[in-house]
Length: 96
Image 1: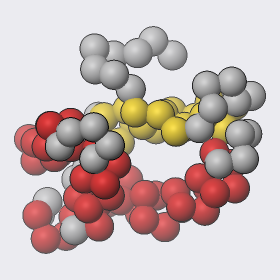
Image 2 (image 1 turned 60 degrees about the vertical axis):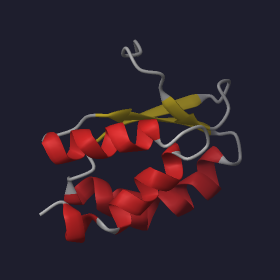
Image 3 (image 1 turned 135 degrees about the vertical axis):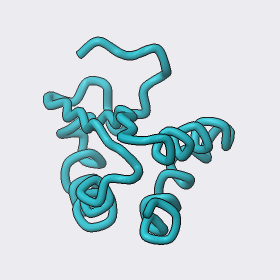
Image 4 (image 1 turned 30 degrees about the horizontal axis):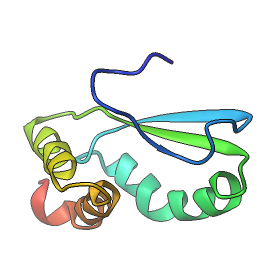
């Protein structure tokens, strides 16, 4: 459960009874599928209701994923998630 050197990106209450940690890469098609197809409903059902705290840890597989995470971090306050969302939704155009 130890945090890495960068601040973690988390969603939900820090006091939720369950914590889920995702290790994600922006160039991974399985991570993209989770983000686009599963995450919205999971967030609505479990995170937004206070049942789960969700932590996304950046785990880049390659230089493109590393650059994408760096871009998201540099986007500024409040823009990290929007940048990650955009990169996952356009993954087929830039990651291959």
